[in-house]
Image (cartoon, rainbow, N blue to C red; front, side, top):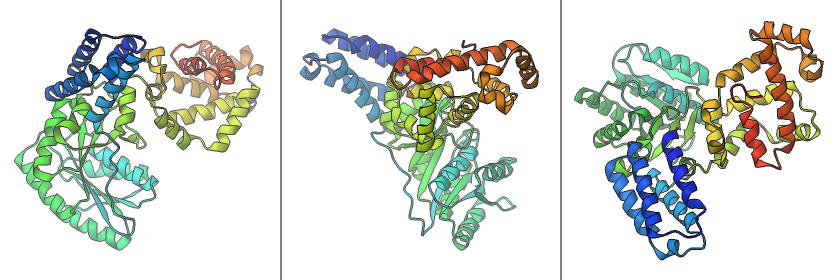
Length: 445
């Protein structure tokens, strides 16, 4: 996510962070490098010019040049300007109370991830103690309704569907059904096209009128760069968007859409899709994203994810086991699965301050985790509780049962021993935390 831009800006930040004194030339050079990085990330040209002008004006003031730590002052200015580009502050969904009906209308082109996002949003609303109803109003794309039905089942939410080809009738009937059955939030999936055209806009406009939506959200593909901004403008002119959801934010995107959308359209990014799983839809926090782009991590988001995966009592028990070196392979497997629920290791790495630069992302192999899980599952409960009894014959049996080689079993056991020692130091040494994450890298020993 914004990896190339983040790497470049992190390098620039490191160059200026430790300087005891900086000159106007240092400031101009740093801002010039930032300008190039933003343009390479496909950020809108007008947005880049505005960013550079405002940053330069503030950075060349006496507050920075005569500061005790001018490098840190300059970094703060760059951070603050990035936050402005991204939207200043988190914009929540504007929904009514649960005693009345709220409607969210999702728009987007084909392939933007709109249907998957509808299910993700419904799952998120359910988690927030609302009672959502998914509405299948995409009647043009083959199998769109069936896809939404499968996703609704996975999310544990109800789907409203009808036969025929009139999305306006579907939406009107869905609203009546929701009122009767006391659903407090409708999430409507609408038809898309390969490109914006008059027929699409006419249909969506009629659907929007029937929906009387509280939120009209465009689902835009982050991989399309500046095209996402153009699409947002086109939809906004006809329908009046209330916000944007950027899908496929976990892809190798240059990030131009995220940094341009708010400035060009005036519409906030409300969520970002960070993967294919239903849980991988995150609220968008401009300040947190700015710190991640600058390589400063996002500890708040990391803690929130951890809270969802591990409760306080379990965390205390785990800390005791780590301190006493009584941590077993059984515990390792449980924590292993909880970490995976929090997201990919790459995404977690981005949230740890300094870790992204310390660990090569290319060394992290998610498939290695699946192999290690298979190895542990091929052990007996007694072996998981006491790994020291696993001798050569047991290792051969475990390798055969997990479809791996003996050397992979040996590597896991060696890694586990090393992890146990590192875990004991984790709370005292940040470098130990980075080393622990490195143990998940492919071939770690």
